Length: 111
Length: 114
Image (cartoon, rainbow over all chains, first blue to last red; front, side, top):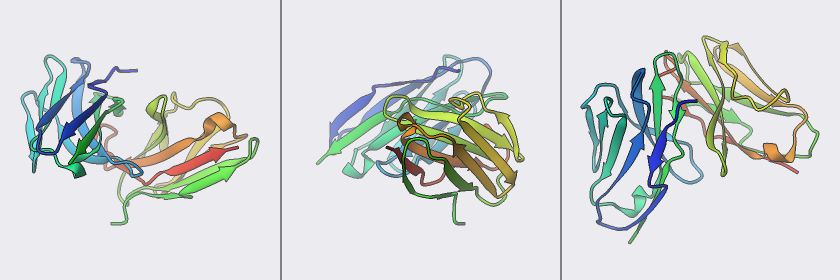
């Protein structure tokens, strides 16, 4: 089992706040790092996949960065909106391994 | 594309009964994954297939669980006999080629074993 840790476990912010969370993963045998968005009562949806050290991806107000040498990725949300409320999962895949999911960061954005 | 299709969406059964969950992956996808989601353990990978062949079933809880993929467009996860602790949401996901690629999840089957 490959340890993927996410922090914080949960987060509660006000509408308009910017926020970020962390995913840490093994720095050896790296293949890809994925971020998923998981709304309550739905299924996880892919946000980003990053494969190169220093990768940055952006989709609207959400962006992610990757540091494979030290084994971490950040997800940023700028100007959070209530519809951003969800659990954000990261998943690490190593060479020869399927995705290992973290337990997620649960985000609640209140108006 | 219809996405990953799972059936049934909800299943309520009594302890000891056999339960069969079904999954149709996205057409053309070569890898298929079965997950279980519980409050305590989060999203757990049970088993995955590549080109219809089981690659790793080390996540299957015990012998009561079995999975098959008879062809590229269909997979089943069977629990026999079912127990109350099997109550969870079971997700199926598929990816295009390699097991390390982005996975696309089905809507899940919510199982309750009484």
